[in-house]
Image 1 (tube, rainbow, N blue to C red):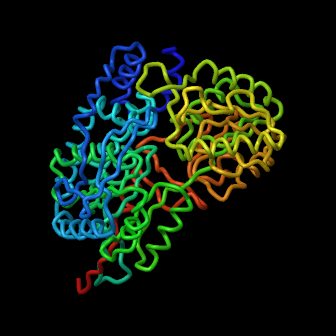
Image 2 (image 1 turned 180 degrees about the vertical axis):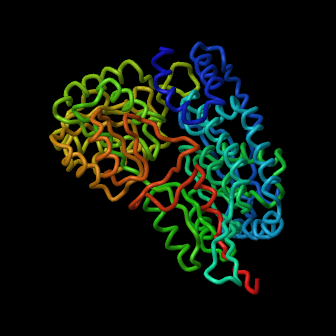
Image 3 (image 1 turned 60 degrees about the horizontal axis):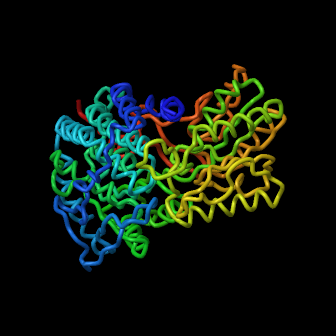
Length: 525
């Protein structure tokens, strides 16, 4: 079991940097032997029941709160403020005032503060991982991976803060000199999702703070506790009052708060990770004040296996791409396209791998690789897609229904005989369903892969070098995995094309999403 579970996580370890790979591997293997995690609710020390604005822990002006529950057990973990538009406006004003000072800090000063925040997260990583597991259901080995992944974004941007170089440009006139500098855009509003509540905070806020911007962030109503926990560590690291602010709200107030974050004239930048439908609404709201925007939106990733591929490698790539966090990631393989020569072999081997490697249960229990889906709505969407596929001729090879554990647990599902008229090939699933389509030619595969209106990630397996270049260049996505099932790493740009978003996060490009380019012309030289 140790070896099988390590197969699912080893690629992810590469993505978070060699510095922490060995320690993370040790923690995962220890947890599998049942000795690393005592699970005595050590996360209780991290729980916060207030939002964070102006360097202080605050309640909603209305005094209202909402509960946060564990998707595995339904247990109430705590309550946080149910803030409204007025609370968001106040936070924006505070962030704007703080920006006037923060923008004047040196890159080195910002770098040292981000570095300290990074160090505190690493120190608390096991406890943070446990909190993440109880709040969003992610298996604890994956949670530990996310904590490390989140931390290295702060390490990365602490270094990038000192690399926002300008330019000197040869002028056309002897009496002039041309200089280009980069300056922080101002207040950045951020809306983060529930599936990576640590990493999406640090990937966005790390870049913004490094650039000299201040932040007002609204976490998902499903996972505010994890966000507040690492914000507390930012506070302990010495991030000044008003520079980083978090407003929490329930679904009841999410539209009002979101609209305020996108329309307030003091906000210069919007950053959002979530669905394409919501992203379009936010862009419309921000249009009247022409705000700079970064949008990491929905995906519908194709996973193509050609006849020349190493089928065993493709199956392992499929396992990590599809079933990481129960298929609830925006870059999960969503449509499997397998060439007719290896179709039956791939399906049989994938079914066997699913049976051997996937175990459903509470994420805190050792050995479990698949936790619950985030809520009932997610389960209903998965059920609807499977029902539609079966009604149109698909065969359920394994899974296909709610798990015997009840709640929002769902059986990992493999569908064979899938066609492009089925919902599972037309909509992002966000669940543990692998629908497999048979194709004949490379041209057919690329056409199907590019038929979606979104284009975040795509994957394919081939050992034909010419084919590799052709398909990698023709896939209409922002990120391509070639003989690789997992893409994310701090050094690489993360972003999509078409309706999957605008801009990129991470890498050397991520900080520039929070910088304006200013041209200065010196005359009379």
